[in-house]
Image (cartoon, rainbow, N blue to C red):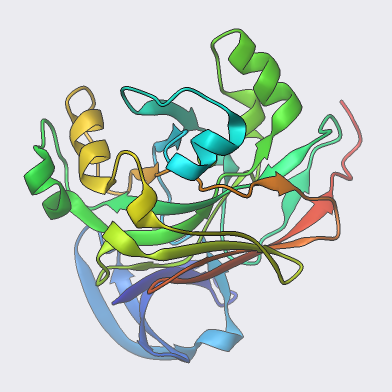
Length: 261
Ligand code: MG
């Protein structure tokens, strides 16, 4: 099942895909009481929103073996966790704003886990029970600030600019996340091409690790990390994150136009 949020001109609505071209509209949200309205709208006629409005977005760094090799980092002994602010979240086709202060903005294709149930101290073998589904994420990162921050042991601003967390196009509930092809394309050219089976800490291990400390809530999102092949984008580029069994998340990069304050 593919769950989505959309705006057909009268504000955000929840729905699910009835077929590849049709949305079945729902009252409520998939994380709470939910009722089909009987209304159907054409997918092509609406603007898709981020499929979830997470209270927390957890990011995981250095979690693909080939990416760890690519950046010459040490293999983490525990998941390297950071957080992205909810103000970074945007949906499919929404512009990613290249900040005025940005000098080296990169795409990062990632499998995103959407939590479906309140969860604390979940063992790895029960982790899938608290997952609602999976979506595509782009962990957009400004490398200059990221590098400065990481040299001081921090990681917030370089990962946290407004629009730096595209999610979508929808949440797929019927997919096994353990071995999915994951790709990033820029202007149609493939830049990342890997499989989630190459994850150092998989979905179950991440849910288990985080829930030892933090009560996970419905709608929380975990970005599971990016494979090798990260690289820069510039305004005018189009980024696509394509995950087997889920879909394609597409976002244009635009220059920041607002005057500095
Ligand atoms: Mg990342």
